[in-house]
Each structure stands twice: as C-alpha cells, then as structure tokens.
Image 1 (tube, rainbow, N blue to C red):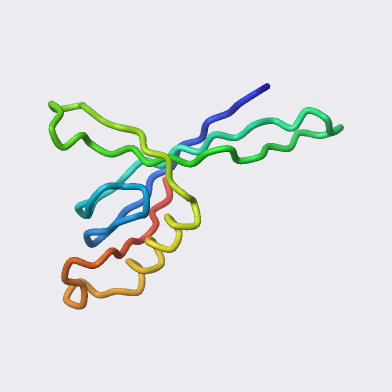
Image 2: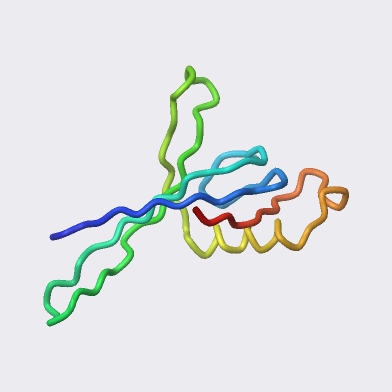
Length: 102
C-alpha cells in the first residue's frame, strides 16, 4: 500500500465550526492534510483519498502543541463557502470560512 500526504492552507476570516471539531475555532489560517492511497491494480497512477484532517493548536498545550483531527472534506468546503458569503458585520458567532491556496 503506497500512501501520499499533501498539505494546503485554508484561511477563515471569521470564527467557524466543522462537525467533528469541538467548539468554535478562531479565524486564521489552518493546515489541511489529505492522505491518498495509490490504486495499484491499474496500468496508470490513480490515487484515492482515504482521509482529510485539519491541524489545530491545542487549547491547553504549550507553544507548538498541535492536534490532527479527521474531518469530512465536504464539511470543510461548506464552512469555507459560508465564510466566503458572509461579511464580518453579519457574523456574530457563526461558522464562516474562505479558502486560501498556497
């Protein structure tokens, strides 16, 4: 089994929440990791996504302490679309996000 991991950044302008993550997260830039498995039965290289995770700072950890939490990529995209559609004055404690590419 051959796995590859890719990383990209997303930026939320406003506080957001995603199912599977406890509580509301503050605005900022977050790293997303995607693990994909090579499907070796084919005559050409094809990868299948097996997991998507977000890297969050630990609330009670020291500087540089992080946790990797698996999330549904569709939920992440929905949160990013909500953030892109909201103006900061419209969002009071809501879960909105925008996407930033590296």
